[in-house]
Length: 289
Image 1 (cartoon, helix red, strand yellow):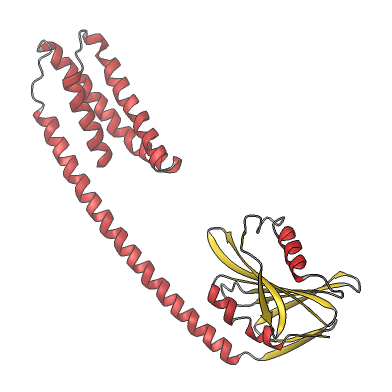
Image 2 (cartoon, rainbow, N blue to C red):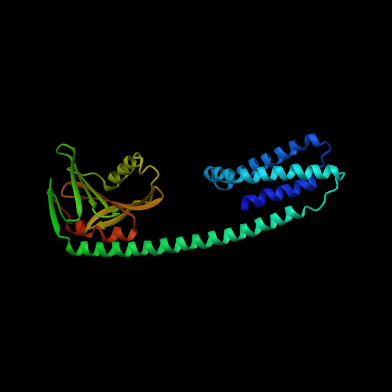
């Protein structure tokens, strides 16, 4: 209805604007005016919305444009017969009024339907979130603690986490990657250690350089390195954020020296709060010999 209203209005304006002099050339106006209007309308929709929306609107406007052209043609013929005096197009105005009412009714119904769908989706999401939270609580209650000892490093972790060990350089550099299992989990912990002492600041800065070469973290926003404490040891930490597919993730690097080793912990989650809570078991039980 909206598209029909627009092109009927164009036909009405054309009936008063154009001044035809030859009946044989009226068809030029009847073709060009709707065609140009169709192109301009599609271009506006493309700039305001998107190419997909513009294509959809053009497709919905083809028949109204044809109707508009027919009206322009016959209105032009009448105008020539009446020596360019326009007789008030009562029928056309009535149809414009009907199409306008139809447009308003259509918009009202679409708005109500959209609100209903949004409310339904919102309630459904809250229900799913509540169900997921209960499942997580049940899982946490039933989870047991496991332990790992690997190349001098040991710590405990819940059994709903998966671990992967890696040798980065023989007898020198090692890594353990930990990831929380479950629906929509985003918690990741990477522990890297060197069998030699480096400056924690240097360890962090070198890691940042390497991290920014990764496609997933090349646009990471990095904070300042701060002096902190890890289990009574002097350490340095740095916070960062990264956006992946429109979702923001929060991370923290912590580095320190212990027993001739240099350790780096990187933890990442979709929530700042989880950085403080979901990694506590691993951090509090962490030891290196």
